Image 1 (tube, helix red, strand yellow):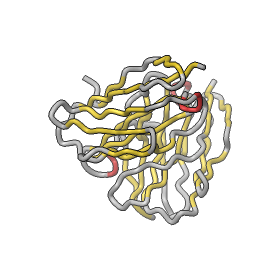
Image 2 (tube, chains in turn blue, green):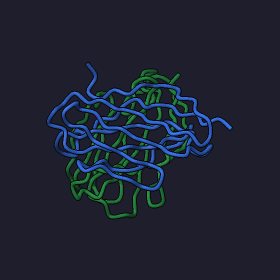
Image 3 (cartoon, one colour):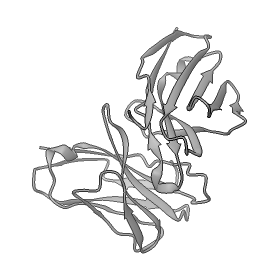
Amino acid sequence: RKEVEQDPGPFNVPEGATVAFNCTYSNSASQSFFWYRQDCRKEPKLLMSVYSSGNEDGRFTAQLNRASQYISLLIRDSKLSDSATYLCAVSPRGYQKVTFGTGTKLQVIP
Amino acid sequence: NAGVTQTPKFQVLKTGQSMTLQCAQDMNHEYMSWYRQDPGMGLRLIHYSVGAGITDQGEVPNGYNVSRSTTEDFPLRLLSAAPSQTSVYFCTPDSGTGTYEQYFGPGTRLTVT
């Protein structure tokens, strides 16, 4: 089993829709969790960290479910500009152990 | 990605050639890492450094060397390029405050023929 797994998609959603992605991790000792956004042929950019209590930033909400070992990203009122690949990252302990998922592709359709 | 520069942006090498990918940051971040990104494989850590003079191996270090003589620079050396090293390479400084949030440089696209 991969350390971090994501559904590659693509998720094709209409503008204005709500979409959610999950990312499962295998190491129960994981302590730090992140979502990154990557546009085509660009570098990943940190979207948000995921805290135990959840995290919300505008239309984006990230949550952590330790019992089931997954993190989620919810995007409300999708915009065309949200089209990108969303990577999750997990760190069990220590800087050198950050592991990235392979990403979920989102395409928002007019 | 203001504050992080990677050169070159694109490079084509022949098998067996060597080269150095440059990474420089002006954010005074202690931690720096090199990742490679390949389709279907995600981002994989090659080498990292937690400060000047300190480096360590990541998940896929074979065929690469690093050094960290200053806080600002963290070059990645390919010793003898192989087609399997065709990839996109990202340098990521990190403040090292324990949050492990990664801020990626713009990347170098390397093709080895």
